Length: 330
Image 1: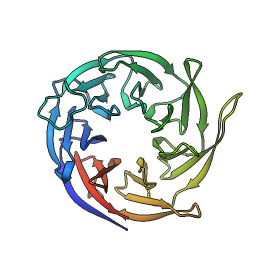
Image 2 (image 1 turned 135 degrees about the horizontal axis):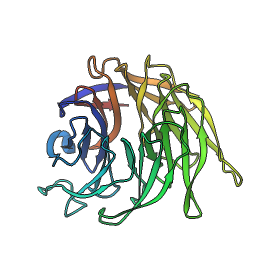
Image 3 (image 1 turned 90 degrees about the horizontal axis):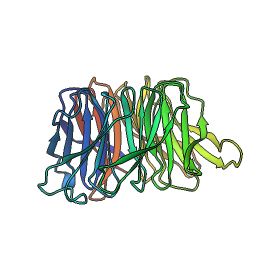
């Protein structure tokens, strides 16, 4: 198995924090307060559009496409979330300009992450104010109602992500835990707390399967771990167990993990290492590809799987404002 660098794109003038992909398009977020859109179709890699408009006064920390549309949410250190879209929300590739649809306010401090539920009905956001908010969105992405403010984390919440098939939300925190949230009787409640990491949990990502439910997490403690749902609980928290600690590839904080639909896990972090893991038939995780200096001397903040023309493509973003495009051959 091999990992080949196809292209390096210098998109931003400051740290690149977040990448998301939809319908052959990639969106990136940066400390330079800009959002860039890049065409991935046919391995084109040309910049399509820059979203600036002086919308955000501080770093844009996270971007997320709404499923089945071109609507994009962006969370910023200025405590707001911007929502962007086109007149034809299903067409990403024509010459339309992306327009600002809405500004969402509510958080008292920096917004660290935003994520859409698999149906696109809900938008989750998290913040340095220790809270996770769940918003209900209208079809056009112009109106948002806050349904719940979840305040059970004791520290800064770094990241939120939804299971790709069901309405199960994970939040990762500076308090060294991951909390799992689900809707119960028209309210959102904590279904489980994953404990075991010995440092900030920076990111998590669900496996694209509903049986069993599994999630991968990464931390300041330089580990990558897989957790499995064991059973639901009718009284109290659901039961999740730590299933595996993946082979030790990192020497410093691991900032980002991504679980591909084909079962590969990618991780990256402050040591610049990009690693790919595969689970054997015996349930043992092995490293199948790695690069020790994915962005030369720079810390790598995010990694994201996508597919282009049937090829496994991995996008990584770093402190130098660049996106590297990698081809993974299994």
